[in-house]
Image 1: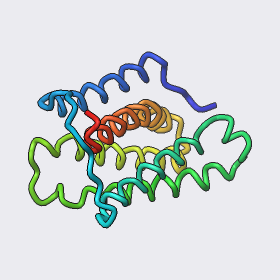
Image 2: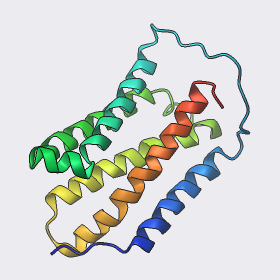
Image 3: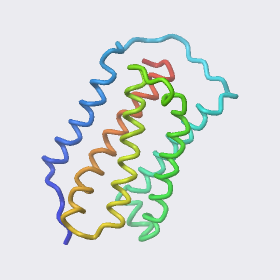
Image 4: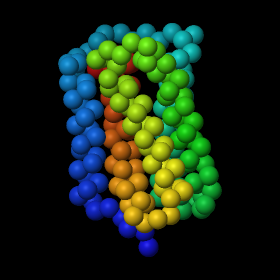
Amino acid sequence: MKARPSPAARALLFLGLLLIYASLVAHRPLAWRGSFSFDVYHLVHWVGVAGALLFLASGVLSNEEVKAGLGEFWAKAHCPVSVLAFATAAVHSRTKAGVILPVHYSSLYILALMGLLVLSGVGLRLVKDPRYYRWWSLFHGPATKALGLALIHHILVKTAVI
């Protein structure tokens, strides 16, 4: 049997990851920004939308009921969808690498967290040693939830809702 991390450890990691994200966006007050304009010809934003949808699909594929219904196929679908979501997020954030300003910190944190999630997912699939599996498992679940909340905030900010 594989060792599972304690619920307290998972909760602390989740809260810690959210605290890091919150500290990166603390300089931006929550306020209605006005109207939202989305240029349909701006491909990079559509790549971001595709990445968000892929991340959502990856989350649906990791749902316990969906996993039970798909059997072993769920991992074969979940892993490539997650890697593709990370790749689209990297393309979406293409302009952030040239000049890194404080306003970009939260976006880069989201990208780094997504990359670490992909790595931890690979670790969960490939590493069979229980000592290492426990650490990958400790990180993967809470980080996924923290990433989901950070992405919701990111989308609300970028769509001028807050």
